[in-house]
Amino acid sequence: MSTQQKTEATYSGKTAVVTGGASGVGRCLCELFARSGMNVIMADIELAALEAAGAALQSEGLNVAWVQADVTSPDSMANLERQSRETFGNIHILCNNAGVGIKEAQRRIWTLTPKDWEWGFSVNVMGIANGIRAFVPGMLAHGEPGHVVNTSSTNGGLHSMPTTPIYSSTKAAVTSMTEVLHYQFLMDGAALQAHVLFPGPHLVNTNILSSMRNRPADLRDNDEPVAYTSMADLAKASGIANMKLTEPEEVAETCLAGIRAGQFWILPASTHNDKQLSQRTESILRRENPALQR
Picture 1 (cartoon, rainbow, N blue to C red):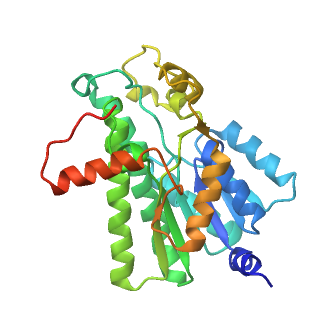
Picture 2: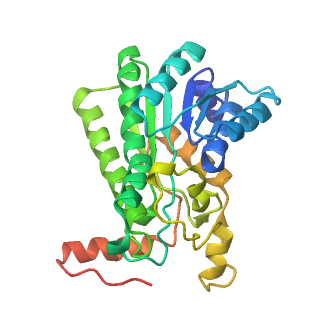
């Protein structure tokens, strides 16, 4: 048996749960995990998209099931954990992947409303906290090796863009939360590993910029149209000719490779953000004020 076959066998029959699983990176993670021999629970707040994605994978003979779930609700996430366990047994991989983009491009941080902040943090930060609280106790209790993957972003998670105040802030929180989770697993000698996923190396071709479609009515207070609804629009508006986009399938492959390798920092092999990260780190060490990077 080859090394790759041995690695595949390690995950065959294991169970993975992916939030934000109906589209984008989440959808690709579900497919890749299932094709690697895993049982997969697809979770998403958009029921119609979830049913369509799940049915498509089932039609190919892949062992998937789906559960509608709202990551902002502790009760909904507890229900997701219960249904996942009842369907496939012990959970071995949890991907806290659901996330939203806030209607904030070209807006100053002091103009963003409390409802903007509440929605962004309720999904991008509390969604992960709710996932950890719902699943980790059971994953610890069964004692088998497992993985918790939290999706961050190089924007905020490693360095912050001035055009996305809320999104950047939430992803900085995700990186910090995941570092704490990693340290606590080590402190307890747990059989679980924490990982933080940074999609890339370029803008990822997903529909996150149209996240307003899922924004609750009670958290809406600004009906102005969003600046961009697709990553292609954003790339075009950037003024950079032939800007590359990363497809979500590539992110899923990077994620699974990182899990297999036991990497905490799941990053593309190289990224255009490396220089910015280096400059930021060096400025901290030199106690210099941050420079505006364009």
